[in-house]
Amino acid sequence: MSMVDDLRRAREEYERQEWVAAYRALSDLDETELQADDFMALAVTAYLLGHRNDCVQALQRAFQAYRDRDDTLGAVRAAYWLTVVLWQGGEVAIGSGWLARAERLLDDHGGDVVERGYLLERATMGHIIKGEFAEAFVAVPKVTECGRRFDDPDLTAMGLHMEGRMKIFAGQVADGLSLLDEAMVSVLAGEVSPIFSGVIYCSSVEACQQISDFGRMGEWTHALTTWCDGQPGLVAFTGQCAVHRGQLMRLHGAYRDAVRELERAVGRYAAAGGDLAAGQAHYERGETLRLRGDHDAAEAAFAEAAEFGHSAQPGRALLWLEHGRRDAASAAIHRVVAEAHDPVHRSQMLPAAVEVLVATGEVDTAAPLAEELGQIGSSFGCSALQASGQYAAATVALARGEADRGFAYARQAAETWAQLSAVYEVARSRVLVGRALRLLGDEESASADLSAARRAFAEMGAKPAEQEVAALLGEEKAPGGLTHREVEVLRLVAVGRSNPEIAETLVLSEKTVARHLSNIFAKLDVGSRTAAAAFAYEHHLV
Image (tube, rainbow, N blue to C red):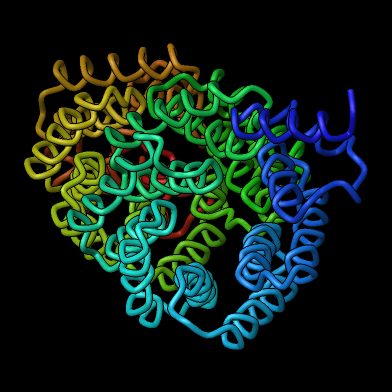
C-alpha cells in the first residue's frame, strides 16, 4: 500500500472515530507526509487515548504547519488546544503563554471570527482558575452568544454549560441546571465533538454531585458510561466516569464495589499520564475506607489526595474524630467552613461540620450551621441536601435534649434518604430516631430502630457505625470501660440534666448519681461535666 493510501486510510479511520486505528496509522506515517489537519487529528486521537505528551507534540507541529501555510485561524485553533491540554495537566504558565500567542495572532488577523469565542472561553476559564468569579460571570454569556452567532455546536454547548455552572455556584441552582440540561441535549444528539462532549459529560456529573442532586447524577453517569463504552480504547474521561460510579456505589452502600471502582479510576488517570483529578479519586476512596473502618488505608488515601492538590477535608477531620483527636478535628472544621464562601462548597462542608462540632461539645456553634444547611437545601431543591439538613437539625436538637424536635427531624431525614436508596444515611438517621425515642422514654421502640440500623450497617460492612450502635444497645462493652448504668448516667449528663433530674429519671438517690459521676470522671480522665458530655457525643452514646 502506498503512502497516499495509508494517509487516506488514516483519515477515514479518524472520521469514523476509530481512535486506536487512526492513532496508530497517523503515528506510523512519515511526518513529512502529514498536513496541518492531520497533525490536529493525531492530537485528538492521542488526547482521547491518554497519550498526553504525543498530543502536545502533535499540536505544536500543527501550529507550525498552519503558520507555514499562512493559516492564522488554524494556528489559533492549535494554540487554543495547547492551552486546554496544558492547563489540564497543571502547566498553567506555559498554557497561558500559548493563549497570549493566540490572542496576538487573532488581533493581527482582525475580523469577527468564531475563534474569538474560543479564546474568550479560555479567558473565562482563566478567571475561574484565579478565583475571579465576578469577571467570569460577566464573560461567559459572551461565549454562548458567539457560538450561536456562528452556529458552532461545540462553542455553544460549552458556553451554555459554563453559564450553568456559574449560576449554580452563585446559588441560582434551578436556572443553572436548566442550562446544563440544554447543553447536554446537544451532546446526547451527537452534535458536539468528542473532546467537548467528554468535558461536558464529566463536568455536568460533577456539578450534580456537588449539590447532591443524585437523581440527575445517576442519569448522566449512566449516559457517560454508555458513551465511554461505545469508544473502544478510550482513556480520557474514563477515570472521571469511574469516580462518579464509585460515588454512587458508596451512596447505595456497596462499599467493596465502590473501592474497586475508585481504584480503577486511579489506574485510568495513571494510564492517561497522570492527572490532577486523580486527587478526587483518592479522596473518595478514603471516604469509603473510613466508613468501612479501614482507618489506616483511609488516612493513606487522604494523604495521596492531598499530594494531588485535592483537599482531604472534611473526610480527614471525621477520621480524626473517630480516633479521638477532637482538637485536631475541630480546628480543621473551623478552617474549612471559614474557607468555603459560595453555597455549593458550604453545602459540602456543613454536614461534617455539624457532626464534628456537636461531638466536640460546640453545640452552639453547630446550631446556626445546621440551620444554614437546611436553608441551602430548600434553596437548591435537592432532596439529598434537604435530608442532610434534616439530619443536622436532629443532631443539634438531640445534643440540646430536645427529643421531640430531634425525633421529627430524624424521621424526616430517614424517609428522604430512603427515597434515594441511600442505605447508610437511612441507617444513620434511624440511629437518631432511636436516640430520640430513648430520651422520650420509649425504650422498646428505640431498640427496634437501633437494631434495624445495626443490621443495615453490618450488611454493608460499615464496622465503626455498627459498633457504635451495638454500644447504644448494650450489646458491646461501652467505650472507656463504662458500665451500662454509667452510660445511662452519662447520656443524661450529656443532654444537660442535673443530678436531681438524673436521680428522678433513673430512680436512684442523688448520692448514687454522684458516685456514678465520680467513677465516670475517673474512667474517662476528665474533670468536668462538659468534658464528659463531649466524650459521650464523640462516641455516639447519645
